[in-house]
Structure formats: structure tokens, C-alpha cells
Length: 190
Length: 190
Image 1: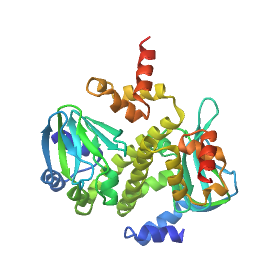
Image 2 (image 1 turned 180 degrees about the horizontal axis):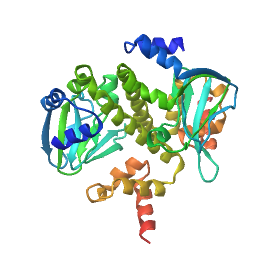
Image 3 (image 1 turned 90 degrees about the vertical axis):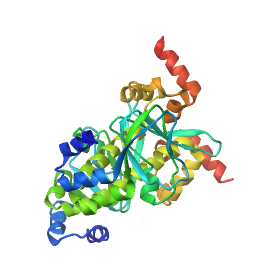
């Protein structure tokens, strides 16, 4: 938690009271591989900051096929933001791809921080702007790059992830079939 | 501009000084169809709020093919957020698909509003959260829905847009070929 507080302090001035509030609405938890932190259909009560490990958020279509929205690694935030901001039940499941350590924040109480400690707003703006940029990039890459080019960008972004992901995790993030991913990998290794 | 001020006031309390500041950093402009509001390679100096009309933001790949990131209609904001938040030159071009009326904001001065009038922060948070939700939805739809299902959602979202868009605008937003779009349309009309 100290490390996250330092990150926040590198962006905004955080009062002792606000820091205390952040501690009071969070707890550090360790989860083993394959633990489920959020299940599709549940109310979303938590937002997770990843201290260590790797998580995956995904939805499941009518045919039972999984589609990966996000991989969450060290220093990333993860939750079901559609559900939180539209006050719906989760459409996503969040699962640990390896043993992971997270800080769990009560999402309602985290949302209250802006009225209690408005000084926190610029930090949230920083996070949201960064998130919008990464989502715009992902959409543009999906539209204009080949699957092989997107796979290269993916490996740059998550250099160690292949150790603990299965083929369909990555294929379903890139929006390609597992066969296409195998072909791309085979071509890269020649 | 009055209408936008009303929208802002429905979300936050806006002081007279902040309202005056918003007027001072903006101007209402009318553009005819095909006008270019931002060109790839330029510095991004403006953020546009659309009063009326329709705009399209797109990038052009090495082969000269255009890929549509966004259609902007009444009450939407549009700019090149990757360029603004990473301090780079524009990767996007923004062009009017029909005669359009916009409020142009100086992007640096709009960004200064948060230090001068912190009361504006919750409005920006509201916009950014809404934007993140729509981008998450778009990525999930792209991953899990068929092109025909995505086209139906597109028509719900932009009911009148087909009057002033070309086939390749829509196809390049959905990430499909023009031939696929024609086939989907033909199947819908039978």
C-alpha cells in the first residue's frame, strides 16, 4: 500500500486525512492462481490495484467462448467499469492467472473520496486520461494493424506474460483464433 | 454555448468566474461539409464540442487506407486525445461529414481550468468515465459480436448517420470490408 501512496503523492498532494481514508477503505489480499475476484452476474463492490501477479478480465458469449478485455499486471487497476458506472451487474469475470497480491478498494467508498477529499480528483483524471489513451490505441491497432503486428505490440506491453497464459487467453485478447496465433508464433520463430 | 453551460451545470456547480473562463477560451464556429478541423501531423491545439452536424476522426495506414476511430455527433466531444495526453503530433484527421457547428476550446487553456477552477474536476471525471465505458463496450463488442450485430448497435447509436456517410466510413469503423457491409445490408433488407 505504501508504494501506491507514493505513486499518488508523485502526482498530487495527499493530506494525512486522505491517506488515512485510503487505508480505511482498502485491504491487501493474496490470491492463489485461478482464484476468481469477480464473477459475471455479481454486484461489483471492489476495485483492485495489482501489487504483484497477473489477472485477466473477460466476458463469456452465448456459446461459452471467452473474450479477454484486459490483462492486469503490477501497478494496474482492474474492475468491471461498465458495471460500476452504469450501476449494473458484472458482465466480466476477473480471475488470477498466477498467484497475485492486490489492494482491494471498496468501490463505493473509493467513489466517495472525491466529495470528501476533492484533492484526489487530479489523480483520478490522470488515471482516466491514461486509460482512454490506451483504449484509443488498442482500437486503432485493432483496426489498422495485422494480427502479427498486434501480437508484437502485445509482447512489448506484457513481456513475461506468455509464461502463465494459455493460447486462448492471448488469442481472445487479440481477437483472433488460436490457430492464427499458432501460425504467427511459428512464423516468428523461423 | 449556453446549452453546454447548462449541461455542465446539471452535473456540477459552476461559478460565474468559471463560466466566464469557459467563454474566454472558446469560440463557436461553423464549418461546411468536408472541412478539416485537424490534420494528421499537426500539433493538436483544440478540443471540439459538437453543437450540430457530424464529424469523423480517422487515421490513415501506410497503404493509404482510412480507419475510423470515432463519429462525433451533437453533444459529443472530439479531438486527438492520444496526441494531447502524450504530447505528440496528431495521428488522427478530423473532418466534417456534413455542415457542422462546433465550440472550439483551446486545449491547453481547457487543461488549465482544473488548477484555476478545481470545481470543474467532477465534470471532467463524469465525461472520462462515460468515455471509458463506451470504449470498453466497443472493444467487447468487437471481440464477441458478429459484424452484423455490431452494425445493428451502430445504427442504434447513430440512427441518422447513413444519410451522410459513405460505405467505407462505416466499414472502417466496424473493422470490416465494404463488401461485408454490403452483404450485411442486403441480408437485413430481405
